Length: 140
Image 1 (spheres, helix red, strand yellow):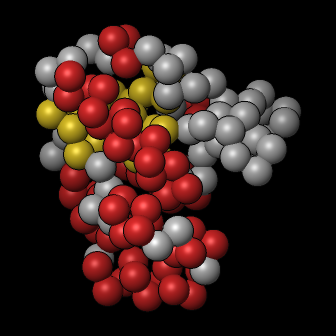
Image 2 (image 1 turned 45 degrees about the horizontal axis):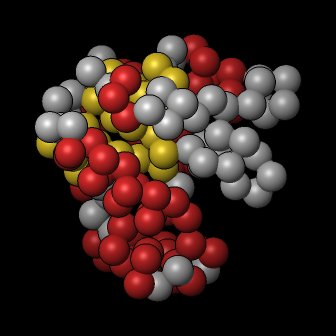
């Protein structure tokens, strides 16, 4: 299966780990085109002005959307972040919505909070992703 990995760029190292694990299971896997940039310069994660310039210069959002359209499925890497279990950021939510619209399979690495805790979890639930609980072999 061809899988695009999405998620907060704060999880860049975890995305590369997921890529390696999925490739070992025989999948073809893509990660966001700027994963390495975020690993090399972690300031991009919180410096929104620098990240804005980086994203526009490198056409990051369009490139990721093209990869989603070209894939069979997406995997949202959603570790805990900012005190939120199963965190999904704004960009990942956009990517998830695109995958849903295009009829792609959607997998979440971990469960999200309940919608009563975080409103965005309601929209995630509507898209009916498969939650793999960290078990990459569940992606089929």
